[in-house]
Image (tube, rainbow, N blue to C red; front, side):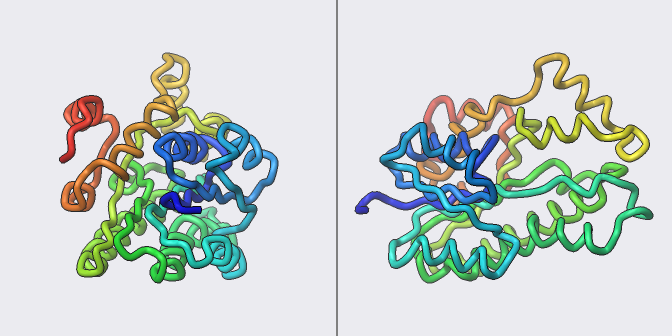
Length: 253
């Protein structure tokens, strides 16, 4: 219980799972949060001495309260907002209010209010938002997702300004198109709902999706080896060749 503690939301699959493993390999205790017990158990099985799991819905007050209770009085070194949903995938003219609100609750409200709730445990810690190119470029059929990621990017910028004096560094990273269950779901969409689907089908067919383990290695370097100023000053991008080179060299930026 004396090791640094990290909380990773969306820790049951994909990049979240890989990041839990990477941080545990760096001697952090990791609390992996997700909604489903079975994938969380698979995450934990790789390093049960370091990884604990919690089934909780980050989009609800009660779920966030469960996370806070699981952290308890421990100091929190790392908080990663990785949980997110793609749906609804549809033209904005067809999006329902209920689907819109669910998307924003998971992708925007959960990171905001979980950060609020954990601030007493975060002094001197780091918060990382998992961003997307969709935060900066619109896609037809992705209105809810693009809007939520743009809001998450702005939350990173504002939190970074507001928390700097408390010694809390806030960062954002674009991981690229990663081989995760979200990409599997994306490839199942109807072309009339998501006209850009061919781009993602081609990336998959050509084996050009990013490996979650590789991205997790880059992200763990950001969280543990980069200076506060370097971590926070601008959004990081895994696919940027210069940034990848810094990571592979182990630079302390």
